[in-house]
Length: 334
Ligand code: UT7
Image 1 (cartoon, protein in one colour):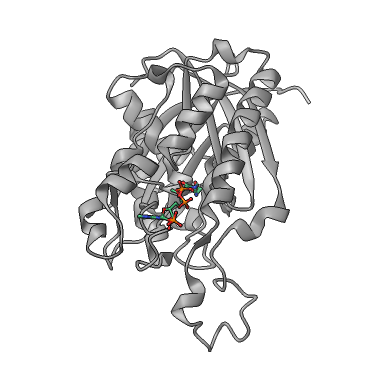
Image 2 (image 1 turned 90 degrees about the horizontal axis):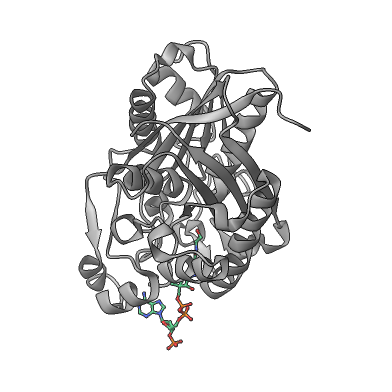
């Protein structure tokens, strides 16, 4: 279906907790080393929430930064979508909490869950609402605080994740459509490869019987997710480029989900992209799940790696399994 109205990104923002956990800190918790983590993942440090910080708090901070960057009054926002796997509560949704805090009085609001691909799914949904003419201004937030579900005695998982939030403001445009295409996929048969079990209503008597802590940790088959990612990410970028009517060679930048520098490098090689075209801040933040793509884009704009106008492939993969890409022509001011 052709888009009736074009959509573009006009603002980006991010927020992370203040507390830094370095690889040296992790050496004191599990049998690991800075050398192993650095060479196998590219991560040097990550941010972790304190006891009184929440996903909604980070989401609100990232949203405020994106709204300021866009230079809009929050009263004009029509829709807020928050992509998260770690909401404060089952309800109210994190999106409703953001709506109240930023003063987007007339906005509809809902959460969306597609794990680390959540922000790509949210961009695609927002684009549909704008394309149909239903809404003009959409706020999208990706936020996750996986530290609350990590087993800090499991070296296979605790070294990888960090907490954070990232946000985009998307708006209808009279000019060219600058969200050139999106591509979304899922394969539920791989759900067991990356999951946080016993956190929903399937747990018997969830209201009265707290599950044993061990049963609520993030579980991951790292090798299988690695293999999935190095195939799924190039597939998504190529398919989204084909939908956009451009070649992969026409891309200026790749903004991948920040999970592992070796995955990012392998994907870049498969796509024939040069190192300077690849956006990464994994060393500072680890895998921030639904936040990682806007957080990486925000930092690339700040350090002027990306200077508009630039055609960027945003691409995510993660639990579900889910994966997807959005081809974005970034022209908004930095
Ligand atoms: O948003 C998506 C989220 N998930 C991902 O993207 C994960 C994708 N997968 C990965 O990033 C990698 O598979 C990992 C970083 C998780 C693991 O790297 P790997 O190269 O696949 O290592 P491996 O699991 O094959 O383990 C190799 C060795 C094992 O020891 P043995 O059996 O060879 O003696 C592990 O026990 O490394 C050991 N190991 C560690 N050693 C030191 C695993 N974790 C650690 C650690 N420190 N933290």
